[in-house]
Length: 327
Image (cartoon, rainbow, N blue to C red; front, top):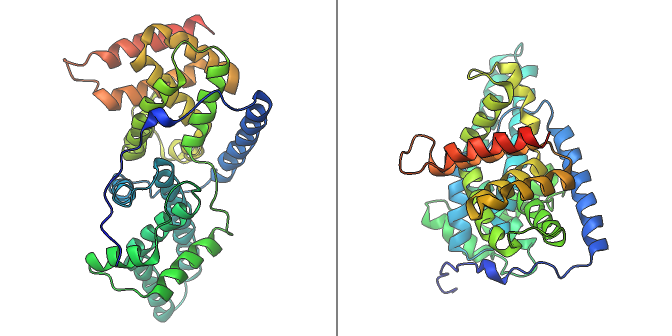
């Protein structure tokens, strides 16, 4: 029997920057940019999302209970998102084909939908386990640990069913599960900022970035809704505008610069303009886009209507002033 696992706090100061050769960093950044561009293209036309607050919170808490690194929790959320979207799209396609079919076939579609819902917890836990297997530095979650956890929730599965669940996910995603998470983009950009002479230490920014990245995952829809309204300058976006905005939600490079810019403002707002300029130079993303995303994150982190916390209002003025003066 395995002993109980206790949550382990990750010491962000252990993360080292400035130890990788510049040529390696340049190649890695280019590779990430290419992967990001491909992901944004593939997201066009996609509908639906499973990055809901309760789901993300479940994954984060489970990862903490199993003493997994932060990168594993982000990876698990992304694997689950891609798998569930594919499953939902498959069911919707079948439903479309069966609209003119008889009741028996329609009932078959309902059965598939119920099976998807009934196995959701199993799929979620399998995604966490798969993500743990992609980490080279931390303990892989064993089948016994997973089965005991599921049993504690009232779900009884066998090892064979657990392995089948993992295989279903792998096959559905064509075994492509080791894709960069937003954290990879954040850490890569922080590495480049360090070489470019950023006045705010990368290790100091890293700790705040992790906190804000958690926040964006937990408040994914509200933050991106705010960003959508700001981008179209309209409080009531149309359905078409919302659908076109889906690809923005998969732009991890944009998310990374927004996270870093917001972190820099929190750490040292006097150096914020310099950080913003570096991020624009590195990624080619416009100052206004970085500013709007930073403001959305800051607003949802401390609250726009909280008198005791005037930071978002100051941030808004600083962001927009800097954006206009540098364009």
